[in-house]
Amino acid sequence: MSVKKSLILMLFAASAFFVGCGSTNNDDRKTYEAVTRDVFAMDTYMNMKAYGKEAETALEEAENRIHKLEEELSATSETSDIWKINHSNGNEVALCDDTAVLIEKAIEVGSCTNGALDITVFPILKEWGFTTGEYHIPEKAKLDTLLSNVDYRKIEIDGNSVSIPYNSEIDLGALAKGYTGDEIMKIFKSHGIDSAIVSLGGNVQAIGSKPDASAWKVAVRDPFSPDTDMCVVEVKDKAVITSGNYERFFTDDYGQKYWHIIDPADGYPADNGFVSVTVIGDNGLNCDCLSTALFVAGEDGYENIIKEYADYDFIFVTDDEKILYTKGIADNFQNISSMTAEVIAVD
Ligand code: AMP
Ligand code: MG
Image (cartoon, rainbow, N blue to C red; front, side, top):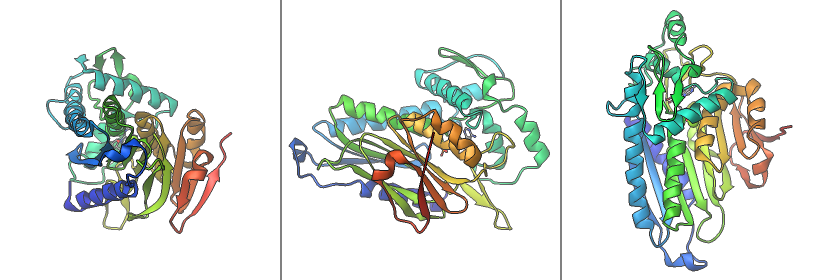
């Protein structure tokens, strides 16, 4: 990761985090100071903050869990499940439970989103250089050849055993951090923590409210000016997960920007009207899958998808600088940008 990217991530993590900090002046939680921990994993700066008697132990356990998940799920680590799958030459591979859960979920959301989420795009990401930072614009013919092996429906999974076709490769980058957030929340809850917030790069997830019982305030970055925030949402017990075109990208000699979310329809960075998608809901894994899928589905495809996820809220930023958001968060949404923001109706 470049130094610049690292700094941006740190700044974001800090902004998401500090907006969420509260005073401790109410009920029995006031006896606990905030316990915080910073972790670098999954190519991301992560911050965790928890209040409670067992917060220190919970953070230690959470950090271990993060590193364990990274070991299992990283597409670039030679000991991971994903590496084994990607080097299996079409043979069956035995998976640990986490990997199996994530592949099942990716297939489920792949099918609910008409293939907008497709974890078999990995060879295309590699071709563009998104896995190494050695970026280049592939020939269309090369993309077409690689696309012939992109199809999540060809993944066969039976319990903890998976096989993918020869020449296919997968990557769980679109959903691993959402799952990690859910797993951290589980650990915190098992230690009796009822007030906590974590920021895993663009993914924020909270337990309960701030110690003073007010909601956590989570800032969402402005995709047109990623060092500043565009809105603040107030949440309790929710994940707030964003996919944006500013997270990983390169620019060509003509100023054209190419980003890391690939449209499985053509192998190019998804450019269907959205530059950022934020999903708010109870389940971090679903939010993470949906943020990537909706970014790909874009302005023409999002409606059919969000209808199926009525318990979730969404914030879209269009490439012509409009913010659209669902009415479930209208009372807890504050636009702090110069863009117009309007509520979208979903039938
Ligand atoms: P996110 O930041 O959650 O939107 O995830 C972006 C990451 O998901 C990328 O860095 C890739 O690893 C992966 N990815 C990109 N495009 C897709 C896609 N269409 N379906 C599934 N995974 C993708
Ligand atoms: Mg995602």
